[in-house]
Length: 350
Image (cartoon, rainbow, N blue to C red; front, side, top):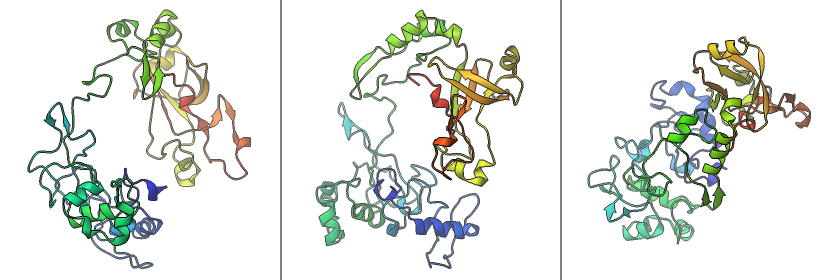
């Protein structure tokens, strides 16, 4: 997968580079994550300048040896030392106004010291840098941009030879003209718990085609108001991350060292809210939502959430509305920790 993900910079990863990092963790600074110097005894790979784990984005091919990016858009560093600038992702102009970076705004050491669009074969030729590609790279890059040039040659020339960023150099934008609200406005959720605020800050009108799909907004919110869903479900359910798990958690919950850190899916409940419902810390509770879902999880009574909110981590699966799904996993493939997936209960529009 990593070898194809040019756009977000996973292509610089390789098993060999990552394994070398793990074998030589002692060479990396615990604060900056940067290796100040040293070679991997097993492979001879020079770790100097790498950031531990090659943090995203890590551009180009592994052979380019991009060190990873400890901070995005850091113009104080060269692009081959983890630096960068803001991407040109919204075109080069809007209503006659320049969207690219102004003169003098660029990453350290860049040969282009003003704004520029994202890299493609046309730009590389106009700059006179096309002949810095090998013949094989030219054949692969012809007619392509940096995201579709599978040789990685355009990235190599642009970053290593000229200190420029393949996704361009532009300005961040505050007015997002292609979003439903060009300037962010507060809008209450479709399943809000405050009818007064839903009336004051209504959602969007229904859209016939939103990213090609018909999408209901106002219709759903109005029906929820009419049905007084907020009276039946007065608490807001939110979800978020845990440090020890990643994504849906299937892989990290299968790691014995990580699985030990959090062994139960749970819901955080404010002490006052818990007391009103006769819930004690550590008890198993049923969490119900307007979808009809019923999740069986452990209660964590805490003041980290307010009285109108409950919270669940989103890294769990393997239990479905109270039932353990162990029998459906191939032999030996079940995660050590299984729990209810919060998105079983989250609603349309979440």
